[in-house]
Image (tube, rainbow, N blue to C red; front, side, top):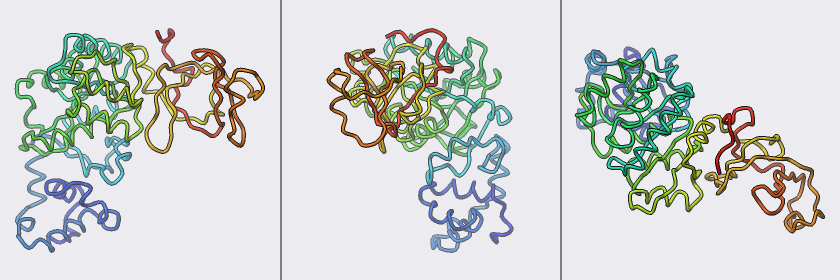
Length: 372
């Protein structure tokens, strides 16, 4: 089919069925999706792509659920942060609800076989987030994720599910009633995969990336190292999404939490109230931090460096001769600001004014103080 006769939605569906976004990024930066498909068909010596019928395949798949693309109003704009890895499109059940559900989504994820403490924490985080009108977002998987969906549903709020397979089914299969309940309750489900595609190791990993990219913040309740939930958490770090990891317990099941916390790549807290603040976090210059802002992390060119204890900003003028033993050591050129004087530190906390910090503005903090 000539490129001009193939509309963008069908071209994107066809491309997504055969390639990853990264494999096409250079071409899509120069050509339309229809032109890229045409180029790929002409260069495919196997004839496999020529035998594929984009318009017919799209029409058949959309009997199950629609395929949305970046030009659609419902498209989650946060996915642009993935850059060249941004999906070509998404399959959606509950399309009309998606803009509302992606206004303030927070992922709650973790082990498929969690500890009882993790299940309790998952319920606590999900309940608090839902009651604060954040969209609990998870994968429907056994354990932490499905518990988060169920806890949010018990508050009467809708949730968003990210599935690692086509939306004509569920993964795991036993959670079909949970998906039906989620959709009946005003929720939605999204997938990178057209109807008929089963779950696999590759789809689980790609869906973990999608989970992190869709959300404003991610809560890692409990995770073994190197599982899908950890891949979501590491993607959140790469995308500079605020990441909270519940305290590691010493149990091997929280080894992933322990690694992230030891590297100061995640905020350490069991408190749902702090989780409520995370969707409001933003990066600010140290010189622009205001009194009462909650300071979470230093932000460099790479990943955030979370503080062991979040603290409240109390900006003061910089006085290198104050006698605290720290201010006199500052040799950075330019303006310096002091953001705390003795709380929680035993000395001042001076910062070059142009340094960047991850903060929660004072007006968007939880109603009561964070319990240290």
